[in-house]
Image (cartoon, rainbow, N blue to C red):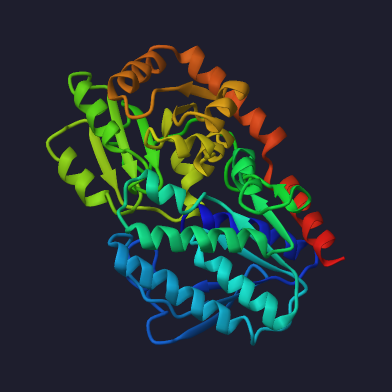
Length: 391
């Protein structure tokens, strides 16, 4: 569950289809609630095969995504388990260590040194900068340690793969030589997310059949500023045909549920399996992609942006910077000011009142991501990077 797992699975499945052997070392499934999934509770190590991918699930200290100390134990336990287990799998030709969490990079370095194989570090977020931006107080000493780990992690691998071109300046100034730096963004899996005619709202059991549904589907975390949705819903509470939906899990979910309990035009749903998200997107009128109004998020391109566009659903984007450039170039949605509930409410009404605009945004978005962010093409580009590192 979640964008990191979806990215790893999408690329791994395509590399298997290209006749490569792929092994993924991941933690025992427990995200995002911190509760171990049924069937995994009595084993330290669990092996399975998922669409041809060899999956080695190792022990981790499980905890929900809250509390700095407990979350740190989770990260440390995975790094140790992954580094240890990496010594006993069949010797690989190349390793990918995907960060964050940042200590996965150290696990990859340990396997690189002990097994004598090339390493690619994948940078999906700029840690520890993100921690500082969302005002999580971990102390000056811990921050200095994380920055030291970050620089070490960038200088050691044979190649670094970033998910955003906006990360490049930071990476180049922290020890990554230009010839080792590559950009492979997130993309859209066309087997899951593709345009489709609007259909009966079976997921919502007909309860919202006549509503204009604006949906946020994803992690409800500290970074996302989802209270903006609650405040926008409150502004539009006397507009009965507009309904906001929040679907997912995360550290802020219970707080959000409590806040919206007295607001009739917003509903919070539990997360659904990834294979169902495309069908749910086809039942909504607009998709929300939001982050807090922090400078670090100007470098971020949320993967849910591509998924909504891939389904032909107009995006209301509350993220400035790189993501805004994509939505404006593609014509696949409308920009709203981050953490500005009144602007969000006004933009929702504009979209509700203009059926032609909705259709136009949806069609342009779907065409754009197919051309520029098709995961099949991105997987082949990534594969070439790995082959170059091996050679």
